[in-house]
Length: 526
Image 1: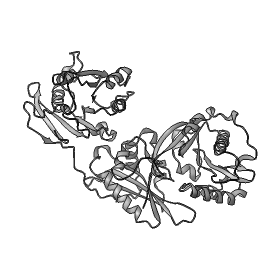
Image 2 (image 1 turned 45 degrees about the vertical axis):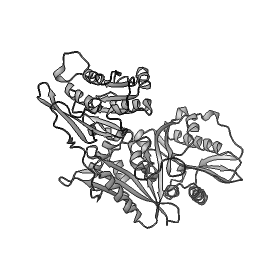
Image 3 (image 1 turned 135 degrees about the horizontal axis):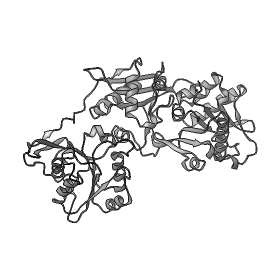
Image 4 (image 1 turned 135 degrees about the vertical axis):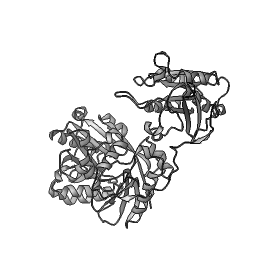
């Protein structure tokens, strides 16, 4: 059976209902199962504990027993193990999966209120199964369940879990695509061939449809209120955003955000940020995202001075890169983005961290001779400018120089925390609180999204390549963070958000920080 084709039968209770089972995709080439199974090979069938379909209420049976029996009639070594949304994957499930040749995981529908998603449990089962083939059997439209985004390699779609649906599914899994009463293979209607959708410039006048699309497409932790999102998107002079609309009613079904940022104080080199591509779930896999992607790249490359394209954004910070372990990774890999982590811009991890100030080990920090920390003053302006220009250029911290200068020019130079070895600046960081009107607080939305008691630390610079510096970088970093945490605590903050940090996992965790988000750092020179 070919992906995108379906098997049908009229064998449901006297022929009153047609059952259509569709093979959405099979990247593992494991269907029919006879390709990979031999005598004695165990197949684990994992099915959710759910109520039976209405016509079968009162029989007291597991509604997926017909699937187990139909599979066992073709391969006797089926092990049928139910799972619950409450308990997820238990040690029992793990034990069965580890002994299996293949895993069939059934998803009956979206989660009820307060329940874990069956899709998430399926991802856990896939992780436990490692390289074992896993087949997802979806008893509902795959787009409604979000299965295409979850990137399962083999998916079979059923219209429901009535016995006739399950019996046809078993036939499909074993390559028997023609069942009694079958009309043969039909091209499945939802597998629409990708095409080009002409993107339009977004004028920013009506943010409501983009806001709705944003919160519909992104995980809960990245949800934003309408006004903060509007503030992040409407940046005259260095923001270009695009939408795809349905031709029949002008509904926005795709959105792409891009920015340009100066690399250094010279103002000649720019980085182009492809900050976000989102597509309404019901319209994915039709070429909308690809149309936006190709159009945005073409527009960014036309701008004079742009010599690098980045996925994610610097300032304003929507996301620091593409979220790690998301479906976006494979999508961008297919478009030539390397994610081996072997060099800058090739998928190295970037982390956002959150700290409860009460967990900060401030009492055990030892002083270092000649090393002091304080807030900046206007007398420090020239020294700060020279230090940040040198360090941000050396470490390729795009946009950091502008953030420091913006704070200074706004009269907020005390939001710059300095580390000095005697009279020389060896470290610096920016701090902000969520209710401030500072340019930095407006560019970094996630601290205030988490809570009104969350202050932020950003753009940490530690001097490198200075032979006169006698204190270790680790000591300077810890002491600098201690100064920032102390100041934020005095300003009434109870938590601290640290954004876009590369490396140092063990060190940050030992100091009480917890990971809030992980991204892939991706950029290419053009």
